[in-house]
Amino acid sequence: MTKRFLILLCMVAATAFAQQKPVQTSIDSTKIKIGSQANLTLKATVDTAAVVNFPEGKNFGQLEVLESYPVDTLNRKGAIYELVKKYGLTQFDSGRYVIPRLPVTINNKIIQTDSLLLEVANIKVDTLKQKMYDIKPIAKADNSSKWLWLYIVLGILVVGAIAFGIWWYLKKRKAAPKKEAVKYASPIEKAATQLQNLEKKELLQKGEVKEYYSEMADIARMYIEEAIHIPAMESTTGQLIEALHSATQRRRMKLSPETMEQLEKVLRTADMVKFAKTRPLDFEIAEDRSRIEKTIVVIDRSIPEEKEEDDIHTQLWLEKQRKAKERRRKRIVMWSSIAGMLLVIIVLGATIGKQYLEDKFFGHPTKELLNGTWVKSEYGNPPVIIETPKVLKRIDAEKALPKEAMALLKDMNMFGYGSLFDNFYVMVSTLHYNQQTEVNLEGAADGMIKTWEAQGAQNILLKTEEFATQNGVQGLRTYGTMTMPDPVTKKPQRMYYELFFFKQQGGLQQVVLVQKEGDEYGTQILERIKNSIELKSLNQQ
Image (cartoon, rainbow, N blue to C red):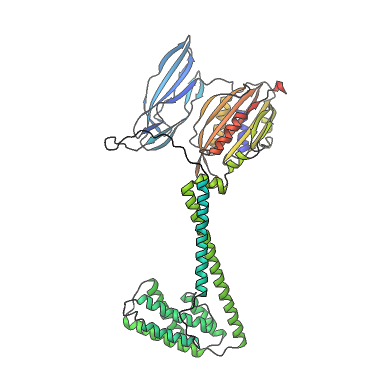
């Protein structure tokens, strides 16, 4: 669709005779406060017999027209007059507003003015309370790379310290002797001893009910995990009860539903105390303590002697637990390393700047284009000589243009790199008609603007001026900014563009350059391409 628009644009350029633009546009201030007035001036240079109609209306775009002043007439030379029309504009909301292109009719022919940008601010400055200071001179930034290496070394040390701390913690955790130096003869003996030690801590007397229930539930879970070999410590209460039911069926344990209910009740209460911060009554706490102790004893008595298949299941379960712990350890190391790297990136970005960090470590697409191998070549007929960071690829015009339109053309060529939504876009097109035709360069510029508007461009600022190549070929330069929607995120992004139009012997040549606004490398690419533009006339071939 983009190619179709661009090709049709070339056809628009052949519909009118060329003229120099007789209307000039200016504004007395590009920045005003809310409610203040900015004066827009339109100047039309015409002869005394010309009939000129200036635009009228209550609003120009989003700006309100406060006053439309009478037209002033200034006599320049002989029968040439300069008509001056002024408008008083304002806006009562802060922001950036575009004064759109306005139609001025001269002898029944519509001339479009340039668009302008007006900023409306709501900042109040009280010079009586706030001192005013002179503008400070520009300070030269220190571009020395010595600080970069200092930050890199600092980042490496930070990451190394984090990695070493994790390694030391894991090693110490693995090598440190467990607090329970006593070896228990069985899981039931260990659970009984831990319940007795729990009472000796006197947590209830200290009001630490949450800690009491949490430790009591952990004792029960640890016993079930060690005695029956199910992952009780890592399971929720529901998962634990379900796994216990499955184990009782597999090992043919004689556990009554009441025992299961008693265990689940205590674990649910522990969850409520831990997460919902509820507090059972004293007699309820004593009953839960008794239920846990009796339930552990009942479960232990119901466990039959292990058979060979039970031993295999136990070994598989132990191996599974070992792998799970290893995966957890690796995840800790991985996420800690990622966190360390992110910390280093944030520190470097805050100290040496995002742009510098991006250039040095992550790469910059337009910087790579700028520093790459440039190619100087001829494109189209009549040829356009241009130097670009990449060879421009041919765009098939015949597939997009109707046969009726192609019949009017003797020759048409289009070449391009990138798209309007990329960091940088360049397009060269040339066409030559079967019959001698006078080409309107301003019509071509208007057609390009309408093309972009159809593709979603908004807030298009446009300036036009004469342009000459280094070998003296005269043409038209159109430049400005616009807002284009990102094709993925749909967020608006500001773009800067420059268009160059030339006409030779009934033919049209145009060069389109578009970059992201504020991209210093894109600006350097654009300037280099612009300075390289040359045209070879048909007589030189």
